[in-house]
Length: 278
Ligand SMILES: Nc1ncnc2c1ncn2[C@@H]1O[C@H](COP(=O)(O)OP(=O)(O)OP(=O)(O)O)[C@@H](O)[C@H]1O
Ligand SMILES: [Mg+2]
Image (cartoon, rainbow, N blue to C red):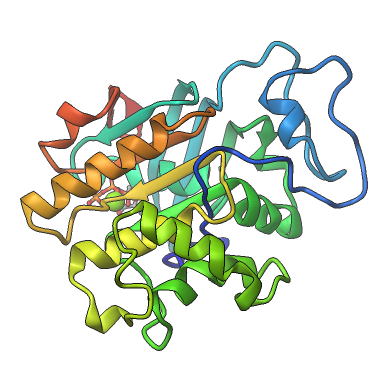
């Protein structure tokens, strides 16, 4: 599971090759009439505010601020950041240590909430979600990939990939065919029964990517996915993430990285400095 954050924990990975049907199933507001873009796909629970008409971007941040307080001290991790990202792209986020990159990723994934400003993803105003709706958003709309893979050590590769489906009240067995398909997709068709300790670092990260795709997320967020890999293995993981963004549909892959190879693979690189886009 994702690393702890100051306000919210938990998330799910998801995937498959193209964004799937809407998954918010709670009662409530149907998508806005006449809406044909992503907003309609992700229109959801009463607690989720549909995006304004005409919204085209998968991610929209406006004057986004995240401030941490440690006793008397305040740290402005994000300081009025503005950002728009369209789907179907592989975007890398670079910048110095402490610039606010991970904070931005956590806000995009509803792992954390802004102090002020707006962050909208797939037409959902994340700042307006209550805990249950944020958890639903993380489970259905976003996939996460982290530096240290975060696999369950006692489970096989396919069980790790299928796990988010289990949390979606499907039995693990029912999700097995799709989990195996995804492992084949990431080049691990011959490792489905291996436990994480029986896999290399690059293979573990591929399992984590397959897991992040099983719920067919609209957006995949990766924080230093190659940070623990040698450069050749890292390059192949970058290529896989790029494929995931380009395989059809409007999936957006956003990757925080210090990896100099990333710039050559990404469609777009954004730099965060002092809590803003530089
Ligand atoms: N939970 C927290 N409490 C207090 N301050 C925090 C917290 N999380 C992050 N910060 C501070 O916010 C700033 C931005 O942190 P963030 O983790 O987003 O940086 P980053 O760009 O991801 O850096 P790195 O490249 O080192 O991972 C830093 O100054 C950090 O110390
Ligand atoms: Mg970071």
